[in-house]
Length: 241
Image (cartoon, rainbow, N blue to C red; front, side, top):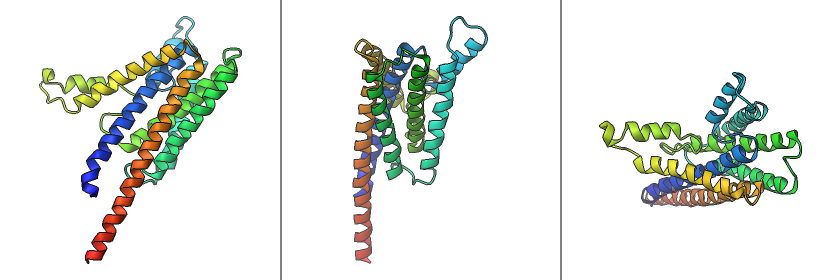
């Protein structure tokens, strides 16, 4: 029973990580367009922005990208510590870290809906820092799940793999479907994130919070099902002995 169910579980994990990739696109669009050109999911963008700003780039932000980079690392470090001794695959700790992301984003959506974060520099900086922390937790959790070719935050390596391993390049195009899906979904997420800004900054954050909650629920539910099947299989083997 367990062996029959395992491929379905792997596929589910792939779909869930793709959903989080879409969510990252939403958050990055909200941060870049709504919060002074800050990437809170894709740290490559912040590193490049900071480099150009340090070189004298006209009116490029420094404080918020720097804070986002630092707090993303804090979030990733916290998740890494929590998950360090967790078993391979989805575990109760995986559910816990993703639940923390859902709760954090929900609280931030309420905060942004009630407070004008553009009124003062510090309020906007708090918002981007919290978003980056949540994305750091999410990215570290996704890394721990080890879904091949899906990181939820980085698509440059995905695009490289898609092209360099393609049949045009003489390869066999492994993982082409998930690679292409990740690219399309993070772009689609950015489109949705940009559109939500016409309603309010809070909406994009709320969309990502909802997606994180759904991913957490579905992933934890499957984890519990697999765990019960494993226990039942062990019991049957013991009875046969």
